[in-house]
Image (cartoon, rainbow, N blue to C red; front, top):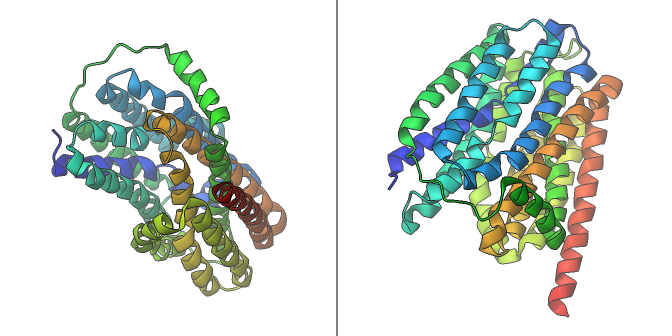
Amino acid sequence: MTGNREIFWLACASAIVTANAYYIHPIIAAVARDFGVSDASIGIVPAVNQIALALGVLLLLPLGDRVDNRRLVTLCLSVQVLTLVVMAGTTSFVVFITASTALGFFTITPYLLPAYASRRVTPQQLGYATALLTTGVIAGVQVSRLSAGVIGAYTDWRWVYWIAAALMTAAAIIVPRIMVPEPVKTPNSSYWALIRSLFVLGKQHPRLMVSGVIQGLNFAAFIAVWLGIGLHLTSEAQGHGSDLVGYLTAFSAIGLLTTARLGKWADTQGAEKARLIMATFQFLGITLLMTAETNWVFLLPPLALMAVVGPLVDVTGRMTGLQETPAVRTRLMSLYVCMMFTGGGLGSWAGTLAYDRFAWTGIVGLAMGLSVTVWLLSLQQWYQRSHRQTV
C-alpha cells in the first residue's frame, strides 16, 4: 500500500506537471516581443497547448486501464522534459509552438495519478489521497503564474522554461521510484473499442455533456481573462512588469480557502441549482472587470469574486458525472476534461485575438459573452432537472 508520504510526493508531481500549461500567462507579452509576433499570433501557443491536452486526455488517458501506469507516467514525464528544453532554447516560433503542443498532449499525469492512487490506498485513505492530489493540481495553476511573473520580470522569460525543465527532470526521476509496477490485466476489448465507447457514453449521458460544454465555456473565460491581464498590464500604456500579474495570481488563490466549503454547500443544494447561483455571481465578477481598464487596483474585487465562484462551476459540473454509475465515471470524466480543455484552447485564441483588435474592452466583452452563455445553459439545466424531479 502507498502511504501518506508517497501521496504527498505524487501531489507535488501533479503540481509540477500542471504548472507547465500556465507559465505563459504572465510572460505572454515578453514571449511575443522576443519572437516578433503580434498579440493575436502569440495566442496560438496556449490555444494549441490546451487543445492538445484535451486530445491527450481523450486518447492517452484510457491507456491507464491497459498498460502499467508507472511506465506510462515515466514516458509522459520524459517527453515533457524534452519539450520544455526545446521551448527554452529555440529561436524559432514554429518550433516553440510545436514543442508546446507536444507538451500539452503528454500532460496526462495529473489525471492518471488519482486512479493509480485509488488502487494503492485503503478505503479509509481514499478521500485524503484524492483531495491531496487535487490540491496539487490547483497549486500548480496558482504557483506557476506567480513564479513565472516574478522570474519574467527580473530575468529573461526563457529561464521560466529552463527551471520548469529542471523540475520536470526531478519529477521524471523521483515519481517512477515512488510508483509500484502493476500487473496488466488482459482487456476485454481493444483500445479502439474503448475509445469508441466514449462517444456512445456521450450520447447516453447528455446531462454530463452539457456540463462539459458549460465548463468549457467557463474555462475559456478564465483563460481569456488571465491572458488579457498579462497583455494589458505589461503593455506600453500600462507599463507594469509581469511580476504584478504574478502577484494578482497569488491574490486570486483565495479560492483555495473557499472551494471545499462551497463544495459541501453544493451537496445540500444540488449540482444544477448551485451551479446556476455560482454562474450568476461569475457574470457579476466579469462585468466588474470593465472598471479595471485604467487602474489595476480595480481588478481586485472582480478577481476575488471570480476566484471564489469560478471553481465551483467546475465542481458542480463534475458532480453531474460522478453521480452516474461507477463503471462509467472514469470515461465520463475523460469526456468532461476533454471538453474543458478544448474550451480553454478556444478561449486562449479568442482572448488574444480580442485583445489585439479591441484591447482590454475586447477581453471584457468576450468574457461577458462566454459568461452569459454559461448562465443561460446553467438556467436551462436547473429548470430541466427541477421539472423532472417534480413530475
